[in-house]
Length: 67
Image (cartoon, rainbow, N blue to C red; front, side, top):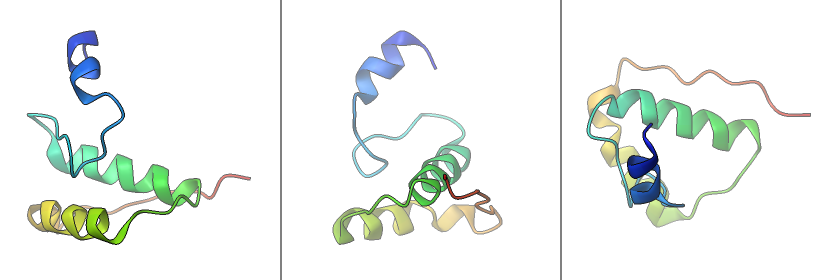
């Protein structure tokens, strides 16, 4: 990720910002991070994430819980 791209992303979640390429990879990584650290997600953002992930049906989220 370039510095310019990172600045445009800021602290937005997938409902507020998506990369122009490799969307499924970004969504899988974002979801794995949330699950790893047992972080909550607001219901509206969760619904937006599920909608964005529809084309990624063959993607699997793998993670280990942080200790």
